[in-house]
Length: 322
Image (cartoon, rainbow, N blue to C red):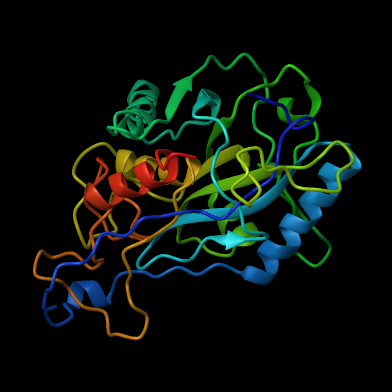
């Protein structure tokens, strides 16, 4: 089932599956690891921004509400910000639009397009994952709704909803996911709270026609994900090869896309780190245990294929016999 902002539905709690970690002994922190940039988000700013957006949506009679935002950041990562607890998609087949007009200029458009396709295909091909994301043509002049950031008199970012966008104005709009492309660093810094945010997935849920209840079509006790938009930060040096572990000089495009696409289908972060422990390197030179595409932070290098923990998560979420 596909719906526009006029007919979309609510959110639910992200479900993940965690494989039992191996018994390993970490090594001492390295100088390189200690100098990695860290990010944070401004939760007060995010809360106000989401509330303002939801007020605008309600005023226009739209049947969607922003439930939360999931981020991929430099360093150790930050938690998903939720306005309410939401679940998974009630449908197993989803349509995605790529807004090619807003691709990064760091790379040829054809390379960006191919990476976007491969990234979603990496989740489509998980055996027994039972979810399929199909790319559909972008036939809309303005297919993304949550990228029109504006400032208030206090210099703070106070709104992001584009009232002229197709998801808001066009009843024929039916995509489930829109990859809105690349936005200036000011959006991530001023609206979301940090220049260290590489990518964000905005998760929307649906409400009833009366606007008084969140929709739970799969009856799992949580509002369903009904619409998603994704954006990436122009600040970073986007590449298709050559990104190095523990180096912030280059950001691997496909690695970031695969991670954010995991959020788009309903997965949250997992794999540490434990905030009560010092920053350490594990024997395999990884910081997060278990290593996974859905680890919370990007420390360079390439990780483009779901690992066993990721596979267990998507299978649990969409192949649990619901």
